Image 1 (cartoon, rainbow, N blue to C red):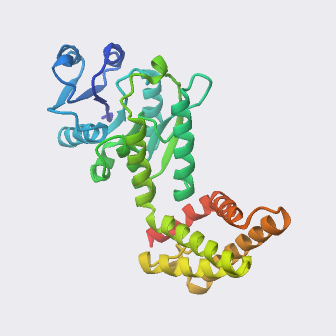
Image 2 (image 1 turned 90 degrees about the vertical axis):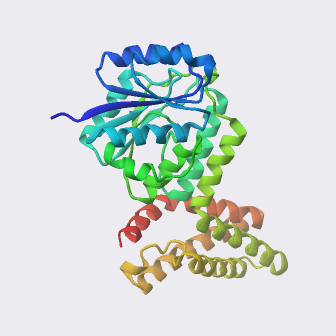
Length: 340
């Protein structure tokens, strides 16, 4: 028996573009579920038309995209088993052809979260381009996972993953970022499949609130990695104070790093770059950490003495560089820690 294929579309104040999409989806004989996220009476005529093509679930008020997705997930969990699920946006930016791509990849990799990856180009609105680049960079620095399109709404996964996804926090646009963070922490593979990049009227149909929703997204990224963020802040502040009073680079770097690492250890029982301590033993982990710190200090001295970069700025540059260079190493180390 073939696995069921389900399309889930969260919709808030949709346009005729959603009807066009549903007509195309109907030809594929997939199960289609649309969640009306409190669009109101003005949109009843559209959703009446939607009922010809899909099952419609309705929120009495606007609760947010994340909540709409969860409502759809709960419905699927109650009514279907062993199904493949693709989420699509209602604004016409996703195509049936690309949904097929994600289904095809998911069938071969059912334990994977599959993301539709939009390539940035000349037609990409500046706000979308800038926001995605910034989010991608922050996400990579804090998780060690490089995801090109963190904001894509075209996603595919197996029904068995709903157990985890329903536990992910967030009711609005931050939910989709939290989903990526949860998969990263639970060692669920994430794969990107390139899709067509479509922006209708410069993305004017999107209900994304640039300031409020961006703050929610970055808040969740920071909170989910608060140990690392706190360690960096303490490390930098203490380094800055010590250097201002002593003007000694190595002394300031050593003391600040020791204090920040001890603080991180007390909070989470794990130190920066020592995620496999239980598996590898204290001395192995210590020497790895020491070697990385030695490289950090050498680069710091080189930037300050050789390149004449101000000491406080050099610290920022070196730390960012170390995170980028060692991001994938940290990711592998975190996997070993979680499994043990």
